[in-house]
Amino acid sequence: MSDKTFKMTLHVWRQSGPNDAGKFERYECPEVNPHMSFLELLDDLNERLIADGQEGIAFDHDCREGICGACGVVINGVPHGPQRRTTTCQLHMRQFINGPHEVWVEPFRASAFPIIKDLTVDRGAFDRIIQAGGYVSVRTGSAAEANEIPVPKKIADRAMDAAECIGCGACVAACPNASASLFTGAKISHLGLLPQGQPEREDRARKMVAQHDAEGFGGCTNHNECEAACPKGISVDFIAQMNRDFLKSMLTAKDDVPNRK
Amino acid sequence: MQRALTLYQTNIGKKAVLALTGFVLVGFVTGHMLGNMNAYLGEEALNGYAETLRSVPALLWTARIALLIAFPLHIYTAISLVRANRAARPQRYAKKEELVTSVAAKWMPYTGLLLLAFLLFHLAHLTFGWLPNFDPTNVYANFVSGFQNPVYSAFYIVGNLALGFHLFHGVWSMFQSLGASHPKYDGYRVDLAIFLSAIITIGNISFPIAVLAGVIQ
Image 1 (cartoon, chains in turn purple, brown):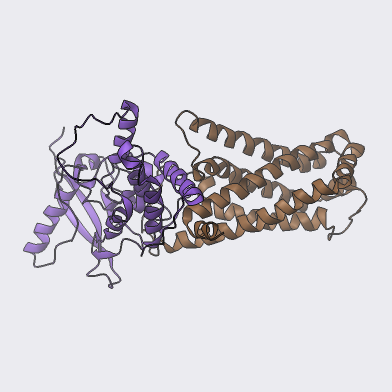
Image 2 (tube, rainbow over the protein chains, first blue to last red; image 1 turned 45 degrees about the horizontal axis):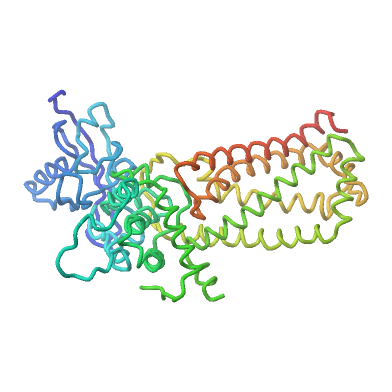
């Protein structure tokens, strides 16, 4: 792996607040180290901006090891950038050695993800979808024996595939309709597949889908862009699972759940 | 009833309606194409087929009523979904790269609108007979004289190419929207979409081409 630094030009979306119109600013990065992550490139740029008396670029980040779901920007039109199944923090600049050396960095764009500042968006809508039904109600007491409830290996694996979702919002960012179907489908499925999730399965599907729509996310039109952009490779199979659970629940469940706002 | 209306207000409910009405319409275009194959058997066969359809009013009107419900519902639902989906991203990306979506999927609203225009033209041409040289008693003659007009033929060919694209995305998507997905069978959904969109498009486009080439005259 070459240690040679290279030059890059960044066009970064700058927006001072939710009501500012925002625009792209051009920044030159004369010495990009191939071992840097994309976030470290932004850190490096921010240090130079701040030393220069300018305001640093606001962007979200937390664990920087690809598991928390905090980071995420759209790099040259792809959420989390050009490397598949990789979060922005785990995207290293070595991916750019052979170009492109001119890169546009934008926030995730969706009416349900209002921009707070620059590249930071408010993903509270995801929290509210989870609050609507993405849980199991458990009577507490002494911890139950973990293997008391038998779960077939294949089902456990499949539930884990859905539970891999880190809630970063790349699916919304990638979707032509800014739909959060993949996120909601994954959250509905990972509980709905397991025995512990059965008692609330129908309510869960209805409440979470109602909240998804109330937040102003679009609907799924089966482009599968979400699956391709997902850093965890969550399958669109879980969208079908959500559709199935939701339709079944709407057509057969006994009690009515009002739309939440 | 309340439940059904609430369901229709959701994105998933609307997609289910699109899928079910789409299913009716796929059945219709398949039957329509196969029936018209009688044109290759000659004037008597096609006119006889048309006469058979009319001789069973119960069947004809069941089909017509199903279509009169399915078409407007499909179109209205699609428009309301497209509008909601556009509203979900008011500000577009300066740069956007598509990773896996197909032309068929992206053009769905446009092929749909083109199909609507084509449908109206097609009804005016061969159902209502509003265009010149229409003989209400001879389907075969209308078929041949219509396709001898290269402008009409071009519209039929373009309309059916749009139908092919629309069907390809629509057929596999229909299963996904209704939640009919299983790793074991998902491949067949796409196979079916390719098969149906190909045979219907090729079958339908063959009619104007056969007339223009003099195979049917």
